[in-house]
Image (cartoon, rainbow, N blue to C red; front, side, top):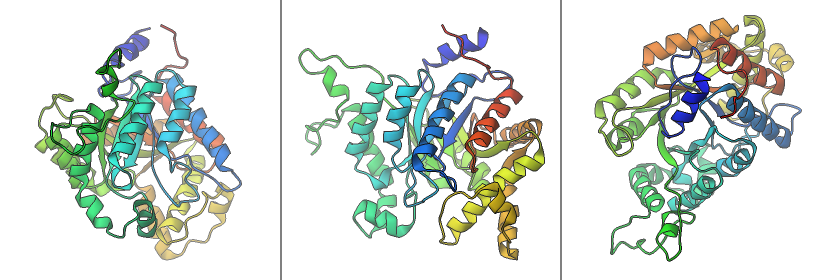
Length: 375
């Protein structure tokens, strides 16, 4: 009952939460709606829904989906659409983007989408924002209708400020957007007869380098670092975030999460067999051959050349995998080294059953709730 009371209390704070079970920090999930060989996008999205329901049942704090484009093995190109579906299939877990790539979209569109999500799941929506395209340059150009991609990244602080004003409906008098309102949004509470919820999506900044870390610190926003693909920069970025942090209406002190690749199985051999599928998919992506996540049998039978083998070893060095105890030990050590306030676990592997089982095993390793207790 104590864990359930903690969970209810934490719903009042959209950012900070108390860890459940024996976890040192709150645990969350980052999902890419992975599409494996022999699996349809529909099946992949059903697995994402199952994962969200599992995460809620086992006491994970958040369930985020990431925006990626033109990647056959990733079905999460439209986070807002997926989150609307997940809102209908969950009750309490916080849902969010990890993240929406702001330069790909007009700020007003994002404010409208996430205002709609907030109306569908009041008090449960996180808006994680990144400035990378989430794809290759040609696809980014198609998304943004411009070849000036660097300009979009450089304008990120201005785009963020515009988005925040749309979310809060507080453009100053005389601004060219002062008479434009993101709906659903605060304006609905200011018109005759209007009633509007006080909740609004919580804004996070995401990053894999120092730029967003510094910006999040200066603005007093929560920050989430992509340790799962930029491990060498994790500690410097988190240090920079904390050094530059200024208290805000959102946070009185820094709050940093890290995305971590982690996979648990009954034994280390099986866990390695599963994570090798995601590693091979990453090799193909990095060498311009994006495709579906291969089966474990395909990954085991693949003949890696010397360069690919070096990449595999380097990639897996930053994945916490093995038995549940091994994964817990690895995550505990990472939390101590980085001082992270929250961990978002991502499991990029082929099989539905193996991925679901991995999250169950990690939850068991940290003594998370085994079933939801009704209030």
